[in-house]
Length: 304
Image 1 (cartoon, helix red, strand yellow):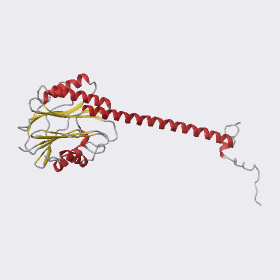
Image 2 (tube, helix red, strand yellow):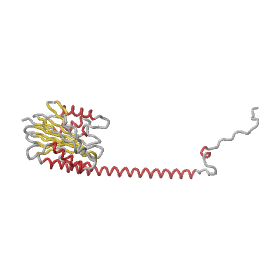
Image 3 (cartoon, helix red, strand yellow):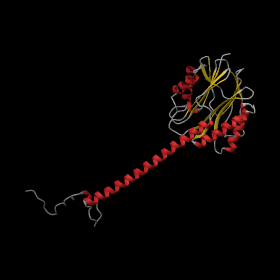
Image 4 (cartoon, helix red, strand yellow):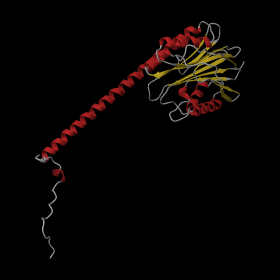
């Protein structure tokens, strides 16, 4: 016979581990009470989820409304973003591609004939997105149009725009390329303020121009802007663009620039389908940028 000599038998385990965790002297919950507590917690979770959805819907609605206002304001400020300008010896085409998912940025351009016969060409980008960036873009573009009527060279125009940004646009910066083209001689004189230099396509070969010295608008009042000259020939094509064309999340900007130069050499030529070819160029370098606007200004020098 097997038995235990001395002592007492071990205690039996509790029938439910949850009961053993109850504080001393408390009464276990009945099934009904447990269900009621669970229902209360579920109702609270549903209220929190519903409020989160409401806030998300309001945020999305506000974003959509701001985008509609931004598009209307941009369209009122800029000339036809998908049109072209035909001069006796120059064909100018423009493409403006808004960001796919984010609010609009401060990209802008200008192409207008001055009283002396030269063509004022410019492209730029104000830092930031949304209505503040668009409002500042409007100030810069309208200021350039007015100042350009003085006939002063591009480096002086940029100096004046820099003073405007430094004194009237607190904590803002912007980039720009400003130039003058003489349609008859093909002389292009230009200056830049921290902006990517234009691409020249000549004889099926594309290259980015060497930029003159020039800092961001709003960065300093002490540094001057330099002027550079380029003689364009019949058949040449000049491409001005904003950084939304070449920048992508997860891709180095040098890679984007290399793709753009290669695509420009392959697709851009001086003919009547220049607007269509700008669309092909955008697709060749990755399509519309989901996070930033893209602005392109192509200047084709026609044969004599």
